Length: 423
Image (cartoon, rainbow, N blue to C red; front, top):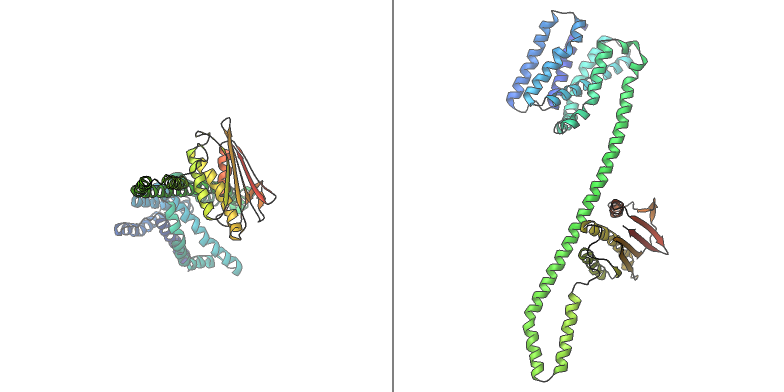
């Protein structure tokens, strides 16, 4: 009885690993692939049964990779056209077989059973475990199969190490069963090493993610600024069209005033028209076109919010910072100042944002001061926010200044938030 249960267990574990391997590499996309796979699943055991009559069991156990794993890899490679991922799929399935075996060992140890109980438990847990792995693991591994070969190899390292370790210490030698310390502690060492590597990789990924988040934030700011500039241009075009349309009426009125010798009235009318045109004109803060557009845009937004913005200083059209970085730098700094003042403006508190900048020997100095009533938390001299989505602007400012080898400082003085940048 025990012989047949052990034999059945060997057949089932072979099917268990083969089905998982095929699932991990999606080897049965078409009906033809499924036919070929299941025919081979019948043919392989028949051939292996014939070979079992020729050699003893210990030798067959040693060449089992050549008898079972190699033909399976060739089959999966033929069906999928991906030999590397077929190999990794088999290694992963082999690793999953250890879960099945360990569960049986646990039950056997708790119930103080023997080999018969272990084989029986392995048979009982096979189907539930297989369904769970097919449901949750296969979709994940299928997504990994689309990764570059380098990433696939990185994922397959642990299964490959376990595969080699298992055969070297349990099949070709008995070091694991004899309790050789360096062998017993090897897999815990691998787990520890893999965890440390995972931490380093995860930290690098988090750093890259933050950089991408900053880039996305910068792009969003540039896009928003471009939308504002387009809106301003459209309004300017509409205003120009309106003045052109009304020009004939203005001329008729002035002509009537002149004919009736009402020169003073005509002069007053001309002055009023000039004032209206000047009010609609884009205010010039400096020679740099990008900075001028940004300052003008924020000045309009702050005026609508009831916030005053004072601008002092000037710098030339050509500075040592690109227009894109200047746009992100100014927009983030002014956006933060605007947000800080919005809460005060809602409480009918007068707010003034003081912007000062100048250029000296090709270096740019910028200082922005705005009222700040709320407590601000700093980490390493940089303000931080616990609110989701906030704080990215400050990170962008720091990243740009550091990229140009500049200096930045954030501080609060007498309920005034002060940002100073020199680059």
